[in-house]
Image 1 (tube, one colour):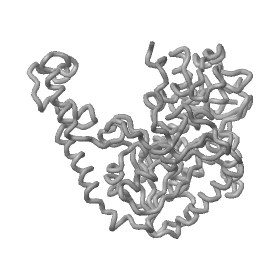
Image 2 (cartoon, one colour; image 1 turned 180 degrees about the vertical axis):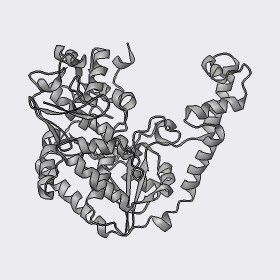
Image 3 (spheres, rainbow, N blue to C red; image 1 turned 180 degrees about the horizontal axis):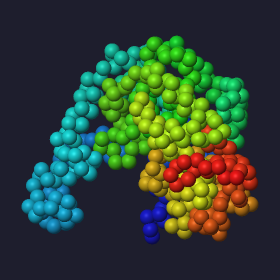
Image 4 (cartoon, rainbow, N blue to C red; image 1 turned 60 degrees about the horizontal axis):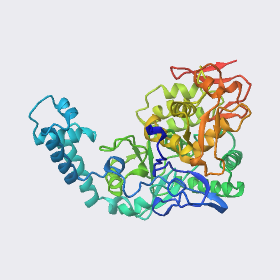
Length: 464
């Protein structure tokens, strides 16, 4: 049995602002998400499952970032014994020596965790410990501080870390559906309608949540102290530019914490996977939001809402020192446009590749494979991924066949149709067969109509 054909292995950590019709809480410690417990049942009413980005209690340090130095010392000693008795030949090759020492083993452990040396690893652990023991929260995190996030994934972790400020969210999943430059009321109505349809939620509930969140956002300009927590992917960066673009002027004190990687975390997906001590360590790294950031956010938001992706591509191909995570996230989001050869978005292409290689996979296995390995900049939650895959299934000219409809969707198996194989091989062009419109910001790809594509150099092209 291959790895991809093995029993379902689903990550507990999931992206924030996840919408679901299943009963669940925003914090993972009491969530009965279908991705954690398969006996959960649909709730009698519909609602939001917000931001299950929290890690499970048994995650390794390479996931949550909290490194136990004594544990690493023990690992180094065990590795040294294995190198000496000949059961770790690959590590000996890396050292290029026949008589390894404990220092050599420690160096190998440090490199495995992403550090250049054992002293660098130790210095990082000491810094995290110091931040946890001596946070400057009393001076800079007060009850008046408002922590802003695009999901509820760190709400509980902030409390565990000792933060005293309040917590606010903007959970509009801007990486999906129509995002157009229209008046605010029309914008919220369009977004609410899309989310209601995409996730099968009550339009009234969605509209109410949008109204609450955007009302809170309007109060940011007059707030004493706000801190935006975000990482490097498209979901977070779009949240960032949306938030900043709504401000007419800079508040008295607005700060940002941006994270693209964490020392010791091999596969960093989001802040929600981090241990509380790591949030304390990140806190002193926050920076003041500047007028330059505000201007760039407004410029980027206007480009993202445009019906043409040309201006967005120019921004994406230009380094932005004031918001260094922005350009890579925009480049990734542009890849959700149809590819010039197959008409697939990158998410669709990676998913079809997984399934084609395995022959058949469950929804959950595909999502885990993308999140854990293949997606270059993970930005999707489980329900978001499911919604994105439906057009490939729910079509008279489908690319995927979904089996076992009586099961919860993560357990349903998927396999490619003959057309799916043709499209994946670039012998057919998906928008010629697709029956649903696709949106990337303000860009709409209508079935059978001329539309924008993205070429192999990540530049937009018009297909007449």
